Image 1: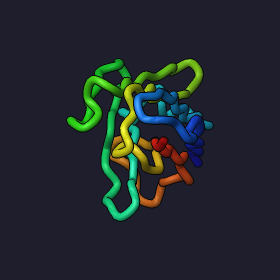
Image 2 (image 1 turned 90 degrees about the vertical axis):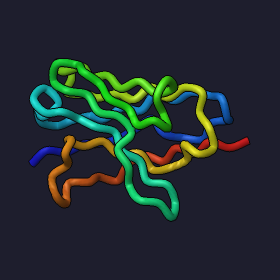
Image 3 (image 1 turned 45 degrees about the vertical axis):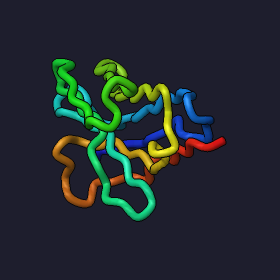
Length: 115
């Protein structure tokens, strides 16, 4: 059983920054493509960014140029650096494999961008 624990969310003003962390109790971060997802109120969960074992990255158009995904395989940890945050970024953020196994979601971490 692999456990993914998201942390680093909080309340931030527009234009501010946050760094999210995803701690992996297993070793999937060293093997699988990992992704950050988010779900805003009333919207579907969407893939925000992903990173392969070798470090190749992809981003949703809505966050391109503002967010950076990275990974530290030795620590089994995936990060999401979020800069120039907008109110539209408000959501619960989750980390998981990409594609995610069924029923594998954790609690996520809340990001709220507001004045």
